[in-house]
Image (tube, rainbow, N blue to C red):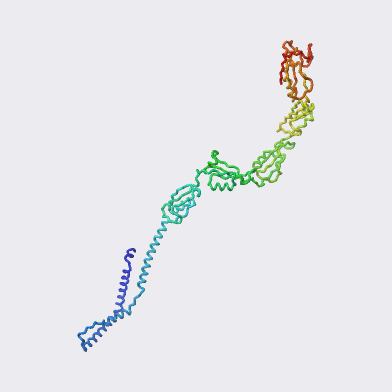
Length: 505
């Protein structure tokens, strides 16, 4: 076709047209003039014979020469030809249009073939930016395109999202070629992002901070709290306790807690009648339904120990999870502690064998002798087998009475003063003074006061003999006749140089 077009030009086209027209004209003229030739020959013969006759009559002038005129047959032929042949003036234009249409059709066919081929080997690229890499891979596999992926950290795109593509969306790419994609690895996990002071932030502000900084490992935890209002900060915890808040990296695990307020439960739990049931049954029910059960013990003469006497909420009422409830558990039959002020010490021990009564008698400056000073358990208290039944009852011995310790040995004085006074609440002390006496050494020979009432806090002066020459086996001064000629209590002549004063407590 290209050779044809190169050979085809305006001049050759015109020559070709003229040649074809002449050929058709000749063919038509031959066909039309065949019957005319015979007539023209006859006419020529007639005209020739007429001319010969005329020439024979009149001789022509030999001198003048005249141009010969065309023969009538030729004139007639031309006349007939011009009259019968009609030339189409639009013929050349039609031929040119015809040829133009042929060329245009060939060009269009070539373009169509090229377009179809191009469409078969090329594909339009979709817009993969901000879409998952997996979606781009699926498209590439379906259309025979290779994918080359590079990844980088990005704060603007989520992990495995496409950031950029080498061929813009809407452009064509040939099948078998490589489409280069840049994918996101998400935020840099090693970037240091100092934590904010969440205690000064509301719940929404904290959530916005986490989203803005892409702190994916910083979890926001909501939990119920009876003390903190809903939406308020509770605490911040970092899994690695060695990390300071100012050194927190995006990869570190942490949690910020905010309150959901007090949890409110629906009252949809039916309360059974626990009266007479074992405590173990109540404990199991409370644990199953998450009820905060309180157990209080009380004595009972009718309910066996360990069973329920009463309950704070009536049976068949509704209660919610986490609600509080109380039951009273029987401690068995109880012993009532009496008022020991109405009993004597002997009666206190004898009349209450179920109680371990311990009676003590002490000196008291204000409570008369034999009266109750105190008891360790209050009167009317009920004690069961689970309780401590030891009761200490204290009776008064009145004011302390200082006995006569003359004749006693010095070594017995600490015991005597403790047992008789100090163990019974009276702070009675003594001082020792050594004097010359006929009594054997170490014997009490004098007291500054004896056989009379003294205050609760009192110190008595005691004189001790230092006579080392007295006969053995001294008389007994514990209670009988002192014996001898020496009157006990009679002062000996003072020997001031040898007097020694000792304070013993």
